[in-house]
Length: 393
Image 1 (tube, rainbow, N blue to C red):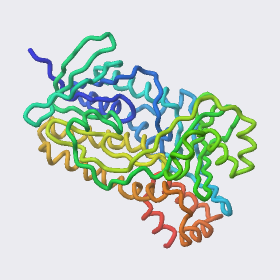
Image 2: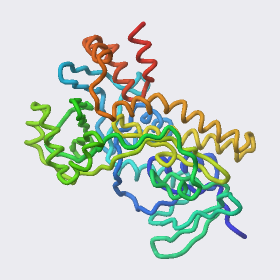
Image 3: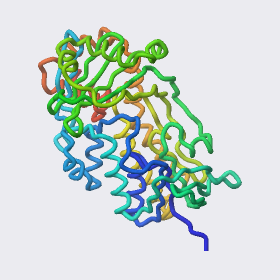
Image 4: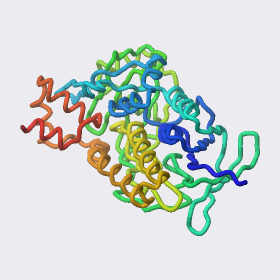
């Protein structure tokens, strides 16, 4: 008898593992595959914003992350040069953010999916998406031992990133597209403590941030407009350090610290992708991607994993049609994402804030409630419209 899964999830990182875990917890037969083995690293944002932390808490995984020694970030510090404001990014229920190494976070999520009952195949390279009469039916691939396999499912979920094999096979519509807007890079430093704070430094044409992560290291991520990508890419370190030097007080500390890894980073496009069709669905960067300047990628992946798992539960239990459930998934995703998407694209151009925003930033300095709401807006805890309404009330 042919083996049939309820769902095959391609990609086992921050979108795929939670999707597989949540479906498996509902009793569905799930296969989760990834060409990587875990723990392993990936080029990615690191920040889990407070809404993402709340998702980890709902899943019973937050304490596991805390036990890995990942320091919390209780405040966000925005240095605009003439004005600096500091606020809390979260709410009373979920007050902090984290900046975990992906070697640790992704392994934690894969293990949680396995504990939930999902079948995990690490080191499995998908070679083909099986499509018959316009419908996706499964995958063909090769295990790390070289064994060929073909597996079928009611739904194949692409959680395999920007260049998703599932997405490339089905070629879904993309919308709200914007080309890459800046070139961002990051690395890790030892001997550079920043406390329980996410530091953001904004200067004309440049922006960078520093966050505490595992093993006493500090992540620094920053970049320049995409127009400078070609001219700067042959000396990333030199141009990165020139950017750091724009804030002399912090630069002095960075020069005394030790960089512990090579620079990593790639320019990212900005777009939404239709996340479903006959026999397939997309989640994470495969379905929606934007510049990393607002550090929303992991949190988006977590929240959309929940939305997708809920939609598919309705399909599998036959309480909702496929099109109804998946259209609801898309609409909920887009309604949540669009305000921060538009703000991200504006910030990613690294242009000076318009005069009215400069005036607003100056006016809220010293007003802790307003500064908290500014930090919450940048963390995605509240929308830009909610922030503007709160400060104009």
